[in-house]
Image 1 (cartoon, helix red, strand yellow):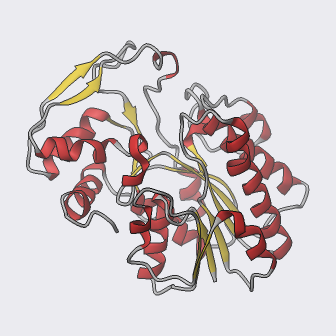
Image 2 (cartoon, rainbow, N blue to C red; image 1 turned 120 degrees about the vertical axis):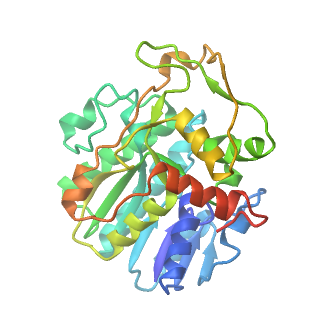
Image 3 (tube, one colour; image 1 turned 135 degrees about the vertical axis):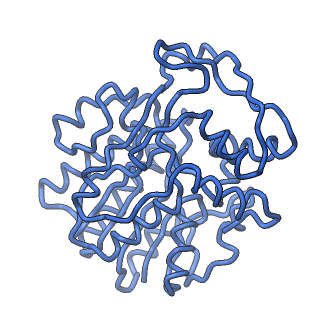
Length: 326
């Protein structure tokens, strides 16, 4: 049996889809269905049970042997401001899962985030030494909770309290099917595909930093299919442990992203540039790019989707279809 928390969410539901496609259906989903259309993210899936997060602790007390836990459940809003609530959802819940996996000798893969790198001034190398981690300054509460758990997990591992194998994945800018419920937290592709198809002009931020022209702010955009591929690989390589970046290793611009979306729709999008709100200018990231050498050294050798190929797959198979869910 495999347990997936956050299973009705974006990355979690894509992982469940991959497991089903690999012939695995003895999966326990842990999540809420909420008031959005999140249930559609798992509508096609086969699984053993759906457990609400508040019942997860009781479930674990009587759970049979679990092959692995993929802990994707968290409050992923970068504008979250309720510190007490996000502590409970992102830190305390993760600590409880970690301790259970340590006690029962169950492999654990959990979601960290590239938000732990803050403004990027310390680079984007997944160095897990205490000295390197202490230099990072996340820019928001969400990023801090992920960073705090990374540091806690490594301290626990140093004391001998750790699952037999554990991996924290620092996801960069993930896009792909089943993200519609995220609202403003959706990828830009999901936001602009419809307007581009209708011939509307797409607005991107002007640059307010030397060396970057308007719309050329850079991000490491990674297709969710790559993320779930890495997680599937980890399931069959239990000797791998530690913090790992999960991006493509190639930064691309927001303008590239819009043009790739238009190309997938056989449209040439019109782009205008608007002023960036002053409130976000001080902490705005102009560049993110995952250093992927650590994961490659660990043995993951599959190629990552290019931006153009990933966007085309996402747009043509999902966003441009009546059934947008995987």
